Picture 1 (cartoon, rainbow, N blue to C red):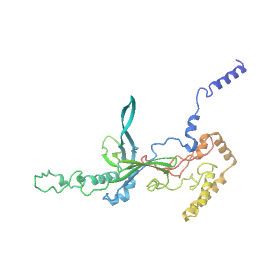
Picture 2: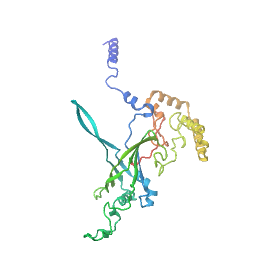
Picture 3: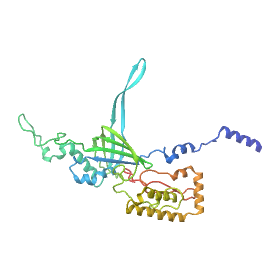
Picture 4: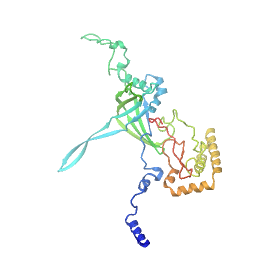
Length: 361
């Protein structure tokens, strides 16, 4: 076959089968990478749960003040709200018409770690005490059956749900937040009630961690969304959270890159933002933080070289993923970036350091 014949055959194949025998990744990249990975799927392990306890009901002030916020960190998994429409099909002049008959909130399940401090066990004991009188009765109340023939006064003890003086619910609300790209979506369960509780199981033949579980029902759901930051959602990153800046962020040292989180441009933007917004002069601590950013950015400018700039810009121009990496924010709080070697170019692909309740990470 001549060169000219092979050329014509190649042109024909290119016109009729432009992608050849194997399609590339452009379809997925156009969906998930642009606009800061706007359409990228959420991960299941990025969530936070806030239990809003009614302090007027709980008898233990120590639990209310010290352990209430820790309950959300001990959760291992949870369902998200589920709903169900009950329908009926009517015959409208031989046309089938579906009509809503009822709307229900489906129960959801939560699984907790049975912690060594006994926080989950204590919470259930307090919950049970709030609704069930048996939990507060002494053993003597169950030592015999007290018969009450007609005319006699009733027993000295109450049993079961016959509990006097209880008016408020134990939980004011339970809020579940899923997080991604530094933003959260919240589902707040209104007037939740526990329907089943399980303490797990003990087994001499197993070395697995014990778990506790509960099913809850609720009366309604409210929705919320917003930017993730300390105490937003309420209680997030306020307890046991590592707030020391990562060495790969501007406040923690930064990186000798032009673009990307912790790079020179990111540092300059952060400094000018602090000055223009007035936060740099709002307090001595804020001024010191801005000054540290300025020092770190100046050091990183001094580390830039022509070769590194050329390699970095070449990577940006030839890699859509690298361009997306400039504004890549995996989720949660700003605080850390992780370097990713990209074909010899030590460009930093930014991600955020996030507490992951329920994952142990």
